[in-house]
Image (cartoon, rainbow, N blue to C red; front, side, top):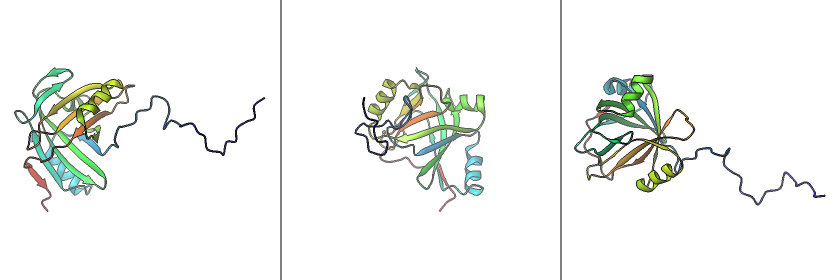
Length: 185
């Protein structure tokens, strides 16, 4: 007969961080993103009513935005987006402009609202490979939005149909000049 183990003693076995199959981001989620119909109105609302800002807005479009892929097809798409920090969380507001995109799909199916969570990664190609190997479904991607032609993003649906999209972000070393900053400091 074996003796029962003492439940108060530390185990030499590593315990999983959560239930089997639970998604764990390679890096912490730092971005919460919402899709909006009117970026200017949304920025004013978030700054004036919710106190989040200042917002820095950009237009991402070809030819600067390269290698655009939507649901495994090469396409051109464009969007406007604005970024602002509140503590350690970056908020992003995204307004689709042209071409097929997961943002336009979200507006059509669900209206405005929460669309994805983003995480910044050091090695974007390796992070993309890792997510593909773990069963994530690629939805949309592009690169080249930085002033030096760097910067990349890729969106995925996690396995198991969580209903939220995950973005892998490789921030550019130098950003292009913004369309606007609101409110101006």
